[in-house]
Each structure stands twice: as C-alpha cells, then as structure tokens.
Length: 359
Ligand code: NCD
Image 1 (cartoon, rainbow, N blue to C red):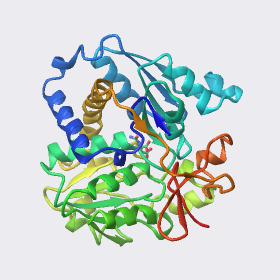
Image 2 (cartoon, helix red, strand yellow):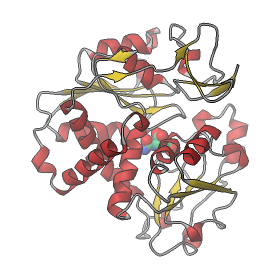
Image 3 (cartoon, protein in one colour):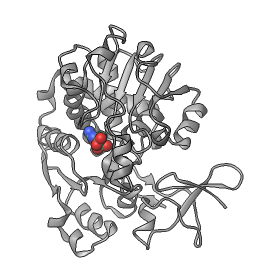
C-alpha cells in the first residue's frame, strides 16, 4: 500500500543521512531560532493525543508555533468523537483534511501506522503503546550530538522498564547503526529488552550485554539512559508493584560513574532518579527535554518541505492469521488488513507492532 504523503512512523523507514539532516537542522535552529520564525506561516498541525503527555505534546505545539504555524487537536479523547466509538481510521481521515501535519499518540502498538494508511496529510508517530517513539529518539540523538559530540563509539546503559519503554526501543534501533556502540541493558528479567530489538542490534553490528544492577555497570558507561517503570502497561497492579523501586539512581551511585558520563531520561520521572542528582552537571534530562523543541521544529520543517509519497504496508496480507499481541491495534480495530513480514523460516512479524509468531 502506498500513501501520497510521507510519514514518520519508525525512523528505520528513513536513511541514516535523513536523520542526521534533521538533527543538524535542529542544532542550527537551536543556535538561531528567530531565523526560522516564519517557516510554517499558514500551516496547521493537529495533535491527537489519546494518551497523557506533557513534553511530547507541548514541545510539538511549541515547535509549530515557533515556526509561525498554528495548532488544533485534543489531549483528552473523551472530549472528541472517540468517546462515541469512532475508529482511528475515521478520526485521522477527517482531521487530516483540516491540517497539514498530524501528530498522534495512542496506547496501542501500531496505531500511528493505522493513521498513515488513510490520512490525507503527513503523520508523525508521537508514541504508539509500548512500541516506538521516533521523535524522542531524534531528541536523544540531538542531545548526544551536542553533549557528547558523537553518535559512535559510545557505551550506553539503558536502565529500568526495557520491555515496555518505547523510547529505548527506538533509540536502540537508531544508535545500533552507528559504529562501535555498545549497549548495557540494566533490568530485571521480567522487564528485559524484547528479542526483536536485540536481533536488530546484532544485525546492525553493535553489541549488548545484560546485567541486573546499576552498580555493576555504571562505571563503564558514557551515557546512562534511565526509564520509568510503565505502570499503565502492566496487566495488574501487583505485577507493577513487584518491579517498582528496583532501580534508583542517587548521588552515591553517581560517584561510581565516569566524570563525563551523562544521564538522560525521556521523563516523566517517578522515583528512579533522586532529586539531588538534578544538580549534578552530568544530569542532562532537563536540557534533553529543551532540545526536543528544536529537533521537532526541524522535523516539521523537513516533512512539510519534502513532497514525497511513502509505502505504508510492505508485508504480506494474511486473511486468517491474527497478531498474538493483545496490545496490537489489529486486535482492537477489526477492519485492518493483517500484514506480516517473514522473519526467517516459519516466523512471521506483525507489521504494525513487530510481535513475532510461528505459523
Ligand atoms: C516517554 C513516553 O511517553 O514514552 N515520555 C516522553 O515522551 N517524553 C517516557 C515515559 O512515559 O515514561
């Protein structure tokens, strides 16, 4: 299936040079934002947020306003026709005729892809369930470029909820294509990085190790990426409580880290970084959130400038095969074509959420 518009659902749909171009433009904007104040005069961006958000939603809105454009949208689907049972397909189809660019966040994996199937404007994925979050990754890449001066040769620790954290999935996919990056996954076995992400890292030529404690890894890291335990993605409160408070970065653990290690976090923080770490010069998470506006300005400009079509579904459509992921959009919106890629032998991968199944 093709769309006459270009969409950002997964950074892997674009070349590395495209990401670098967006990040470089983000840096240029950071150094002189005024120069770009009229880039989007007369343009409208719609933000459809079916899930709570502070940074992503407001940084997208700020980005569009700073480019001279205007914004429409909702951040509480209960106030829209979604509450009357409208499908993503219909909502996005309608809104895409009111706007030039549509930014969507939704609790189900694959939802942004669904929006791109029918939208009559560009669609940007601002987080689809526990799956992907490409614009947080652009933010992280800009932060690394400015603060570490490189995207290669880094030892990156990722700590916390690696199974449900969409930010770390997108970031691993992106950083693993740059040379000599090493990942250290710090999590409990229950919250470990999904197998498909580990396979992508290996296929891209990067390496990873897995450990259980922050103490055993922190000393070797150039970057520590902390994440929140994603309470809303657990099947029960008991399962969440069993994982809560497992990893807490405090001043004592920071003493074990390199002098030039930086601490990133997509935020919001719950209790995984104590507030006394905030004054440590290596704590970069608030700066990171600020950089998110510049890189989103760069992304909006790039997508509106380039008039490209895109391929939306590339897999094979199966009539009688369902995705096994209960949080996949295809198990909630029945009309969707079930599209799978072959992942070797009899293994299929859902094109919406990347869940694998044997047939
Ligand atoms: C993250 C998200 O929504 O995935 N936040 C963000 O976009 N800045 C991380 C989180 O919610 O834990």
